Length: 331
Image (cartoon, rainbow, N blue to C red; front, side, top):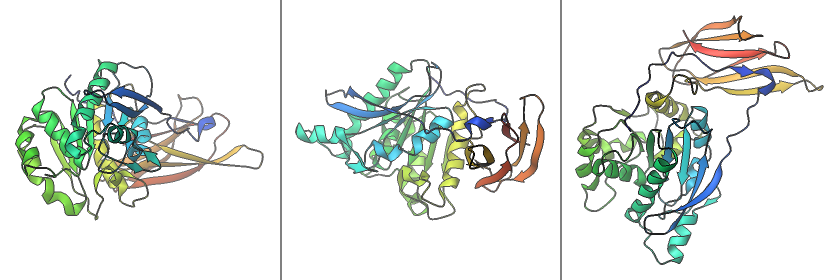
């Protein structure tokens, strides 16, 4: 399935006062077999049963697990993507999440080096294709897996419909393994890393023949792999802005917002909501408008001319009643 460009209007994000603090995205831990029979553990972050909703398959970095995406996958859900975060057989533990696939591989005497994870990655993508047959499937890698997703996509036509690669490099033998496969990549590609790592992947990126490829180098030091998106890092917003701009290619006009909102509320002792605080990513060079409504028909401008600088914008408003809606849009 080919990638679907977006022609959607840039509007979005209604917030119902009664739901001012949205719940975190839920996930289900599942297992399925790799091509050699090894059982793979994965976390499935499923939004709904929309058959055309795109699915991102998330692969972790060295010595880690599917726990790398416990913060990232819910945010991707908010952007409208289903996610599948797997344990590859090469890994260990991160964020308190043990790599169960790696444990099984070790117990069975199977290889657990980086290249040994290839069957797990292929099987996870095949599982996503089987369970989302009408949807684009996007491969997302971190460190060694970010290199392997480029290799696999370059060698197998139609394996995935897009790639996000965080800190790829020639980590293998032979030393041109990834660069040799890269010309076969024809789908949209996004590559990023820590600022100091760009020389590790520049030749790989240049070898990719896709007409739709994007790279992002942070102005700050940045971080290695997909952890660059973790909120604990002060420059994570810049990475998220670049990621969201790339993912717009698969955003459907009617299924999810372009502008994701983080919402919190303060309450009076009686429990009544007193104030709402909104936070949203504001792209550099863009201007934003916040409006409020009590009936979803008549909208009042609360603030306009909010200039983006690549970081999150935060605004607080006194609650406008028991039923009150807010929206954010680009001007």
